[in-house]
Image 1 (spheres, one colour):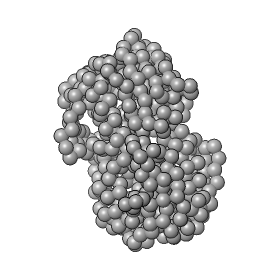
Image 2 (cartoon, rainbow, N blue to C red):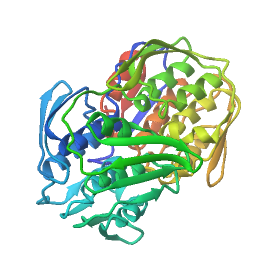
Image 3 (cartoon, one colour):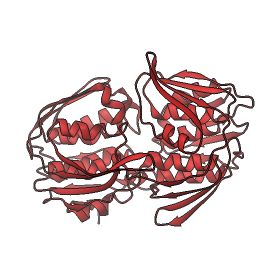
Image 4 (cartoon, rainbow, N blue to C red):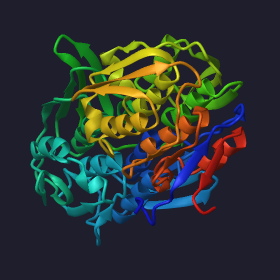
Length: 450
């Protein structure tokens, strides 16, 4: 079974040049936060370009369950009439967050300091993922969590009636954990402080500031320090969601490995805390150009052009770059298989606890398609043999993970034989137009029985 229905086996066959414009969906991280902060503001927040993948739609339903009025006006335009900080109502039913770790963890943070209870669940993949990394710091505010063994969903959160401010040092780089603590801090008197060893994606800090919260970000000897003053009245905003750099990674990486390709991806967000993949690809020798650099809604944006790059070489990816590209390592490994030499990826333990164990999933599938892979607990390496060297021909398990499924379908476009995945259904959680978009560029994708 896929995340939201029967399994959808898919195949990707070797194809001719990929050409044209790829209008990828809106940024998933910004979309989640737009809905949640809109629900915590007083008045109407207007959003354009919202990603309408299942993950974000589940967050929209959750905000409705907590009392906000969420309206879809069509064509990616949405509005949220918020209830104010601390104004969430207790949901009547269980909150189903589907496949979204980001959604459930941020929503938990947003409700954690309001004296209500809510029960959260998800699909089979999400219910295996650890929630203690969020519920442990939320407990410092006075929040109670009651879940399955190992801190897993389904789980009931009881919000703190008299929350106290917290200073929390994030043990492992995680924008989800940082964001959950900051959202919880909104309804707490005094200052909530989060300290990171290294900076992670900063959409939450940028958006909190835009909504009118008092937030100070500084680099200190002790780490990246974020201080939030609680109990603000958040002002509604008009938000234009930039296109998702994580989704853009798939047509970009496909263009780099399919001979003759030339693909333009307009308007993608290039927040420096999210752009590590593109720096890494350039370090490998990829033909990438950034055109029409601009700023939209506080986020840097550009049009990105990617062309076939047959002379890419493997590199050692700086481990400090991991936080800025953690979701892109699977598709990077596909590029690495088509480069020349070893690409080493270190400091990526977080990949073991994403929607799946992404290191194991990619290593297993790449090996089945003739690629040499080595791995450890927090590292892996791919031995590339150059452009067009991947034999292909295997069927890979997607493990209910959208990025694993898409990565193997990209692999098939440049392999000698078609590559299949057992279930492409989860792709809809983040990139619902993946199939028609890639097909319009020239990809040869098919569903079994279609």
